[in-house]
Structures are given as structure tokens and as C-alpha cells.
Image 1: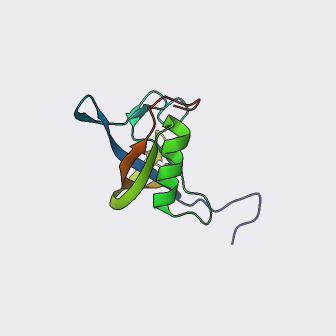
Image 2: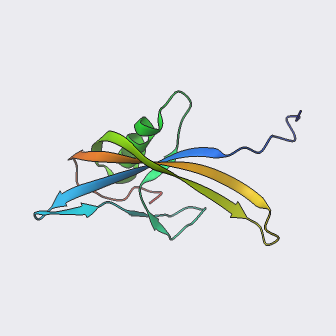
Image 3: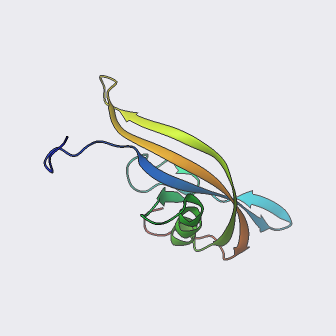
Length: 116
């Protein structure tokens, strides 16, 4: 059992929005460049933490709107991705389970928010 000064380390649940944006007669996948750690500077699908009481699909749509201003409807779970951040000795420091959700574009022009 852990005390409040020694929290149990657990994986963090996140959701990614995979959405194609129609533009000029072609579909473009919406990506964001991460501004904050982990992976600052990396490109990836918009996404973030799943909040308590929220499904991964709901989180993907919410994060997409927050990060890009795009509204989309979650359609289906595509896959999940396990991400483990390790220190120099190889010990896991953080672990994420990311759920990739296919979303149908509804409206909005993609623009980055303050964290993307």
C-alpha cells in the first residue's frame, strides 16, 4: 500500500484523434507539433488525457477541438499505442496507453492552440 507521499505509479490513459480534413478536393490528415513535454517538437495526432467519466472517443473529439479548433465526430477505435518513457538506465519513468480514435471531420479550419 502506498502513502500520499509515495503515490502508486500507473499508466496514464490518453486519446488521439485521427481525422482527415477535406481541403482542395483532397483529404489531409490533421497533425500538431507538440509544444510541451513529453515529446516537445514532435509531430503527432491531436490528443491528450482522458478525463474521469469521459470515454476515449469523447476525449479524442474534445482534445481535437481544444488543440485545433476542428469539430469532428468520433467513429471508431482504430488501435492503441503503448508508450513507455525510460531513464538512461532503462527504468520506466512514465507510461501511457493511447487510444487512437478515427473521427469524421464536421467543421472548422485547423489552427494550433497554445500547447500545439
